[in-house]
Length: 131
Image (cartoon, rainbow, N blue to C red; front, side, top):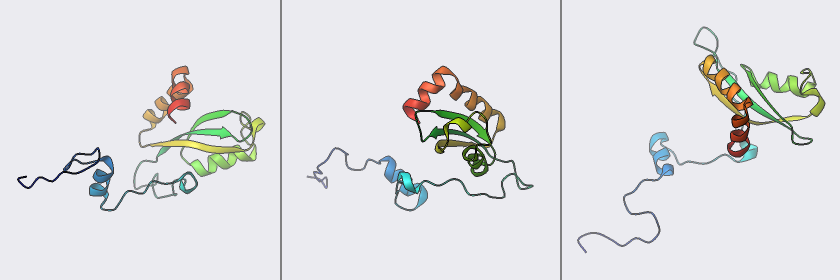
């Protein structure tokens, strides 16, 4: 058969998948993180003289009921601690909170635009469906 071998499965021979592209780019096999393995970003020298600070747009979910809160911060760990300590009047009624998701931005104006979008009706629908 001219060097062509029949291969079973739905992926044709020679094609690349997203997983194999990640392996090529990262040089190691892709291993997805489970829910319990997701970690908050580590504190770093970002925001010092080395460069601009990251802005985090975050979504909190109350552990009691279906309440959500969307915010923006430069220190995600400290902000979550403030929410759970009851220091934020809007979120103190629905303690405790857990971090549902967050997105990091290098550009402050982009972070503000994304936060405003998530607070809009279409952004709420997007976050409930996709995030």
